[in-house]
Image (cartoon, rainbow, N blue to C red; front, side):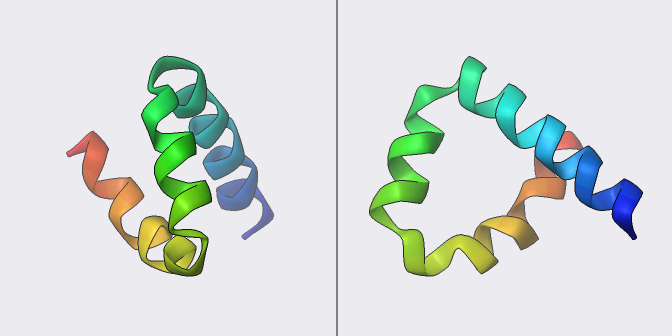
Length: 45
């Protein structure tokens, strides 16, 4: 489980560097961060 968490952090920070609008979206919709966790894997399929 820890490996998946680390993998998510690496992918998330990579996403923040490549797509700054994701940072704005997450900060603006901070209450929907759980939904973002569910949507995140779909970006790679």
